[in-house]
Length: 430
Image (cartoon, rainbow, N blue to C red; front, side):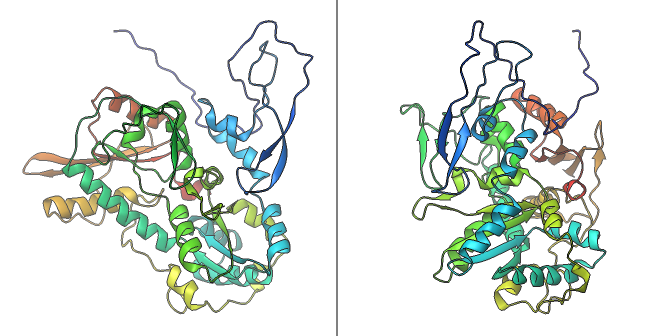
């Protein structure tokens, strides 16, 4: 059988690249002006914004489509370029404006991701623990009440994900490669089905390989372009959303909470805007605003972070963060220096599964085998000469598509795949 090799593939679509949705309609009336419509913001309930009605049908290859955020999320084409649309809605300007307006009426909480914090620390040439405490001082100066990191939520995500994998492994079934019923989330507790008669969801927690769900770019791609893969995707929330749930439900002291996170990836803005994380009872999202590490650096422009005092952390800030009680050093649940680009899911779950299922203790350094490129690695466990576990890291859409093709053909040898849309380690991309 003949084959075709495609080279020079790029995992990214530049935000400045025009949308080229390949839909044509001959004789379309070009004289029609774009319609101005009022839409409720996807990010903040009750705020109205003027948007341009999208024009996705092109009459010629020279026309450029006008695309809204919802259109981007509903599109089966680009993923990463949709990030730029959210920048204006979830931005430092919006965060500072909310602080200025609601400082005395709301409790403001900021969550720092370890990856973003490490980037800030490297930029200012500071130890991570020192950088964290100086950032606490900075945020307090501008009106923030509580500053956390997402280490506690990341540990909870690992615990939940490993329990889910064990359940899938013990009850694994071969599922047909078919998409679940089409639906849309209304809130965290309600889902509407487009076909009211088609509500038969596939069995939960039985499909292998289990594919991680912490990368929103990958999840968006799967939902819009490869919906058949949804039964294989982990149901565990990302650390950002776990922390959002905890902050809104446990940290609140009677006042409404405004929760802002600082993340290494712009796609986290897409994740926070999903209705899956909307509390219908209060009409609020678990995460109100997401800032990229680069946006926090812009906020710090002109600020000598190194000269700021190191804040004394409150009991809540110590309890909820991955720092020692005195804030002197960063605590870590990992004792190895393995592959932890998207949160250490593979490392943690592989070691736990080996011990829980086969009573095998793994070495400090797992024996990874490199794939066809630097963004694909795998590791396996053999017991009695039989391969009982096989895990893989797949970063970038080229590798993701390879994995999905194997799953589709029921020829995927892996039990677990840690997936990220971006090639390379997320710590580098931040």
